[in-house]
Image 1 (cartoon, one colour):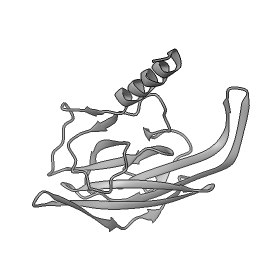
Image 2 (spheres, one colour; image 1 turned 45 degrees about the vertical axis):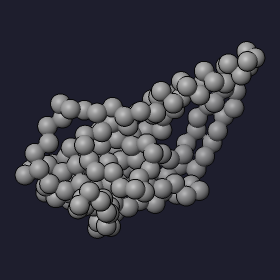
Image 3 (spheres, helix red, strand yellow; image 1 turned 180 degrees about the vertical axis):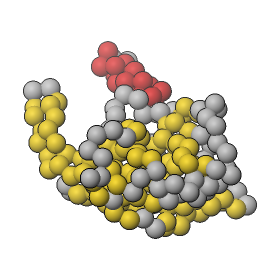
Length: 173
């Protein structure tokens, strides 16, 4: 094997090792008061709790584009067959609005190259129900963000998903 081939194999093994799951066994989840939410990687995502609007600053960073740490953070949610590869899972309060903002674009430097892409930031809100599992999915289409929420159901070992209603969220005044 040449040095170049050895380097390629080493890089592949390194990337494979990065794409694993991290289980959080110490996360407290009470189905009587809490819901669980899975957010897929792709765009910068923030949570704003118990509000139907989103402030200019703050929020909990739920996901952001990342290269070196692709490990899923799991808390035991059921995974549907059509699940995306990389995600994080969270416990949130049931019965309270959860506003989620997504941001894409802007200016960034990669080596000597400066990339300018159209900026788009949007937010949506929904009220997760206690004891339920949800997926929040954002899809970047060109320079726009599309969003949807799915509620997950587990019956006889099979996970199904149904669309969950949500509304657009405005900036907090």
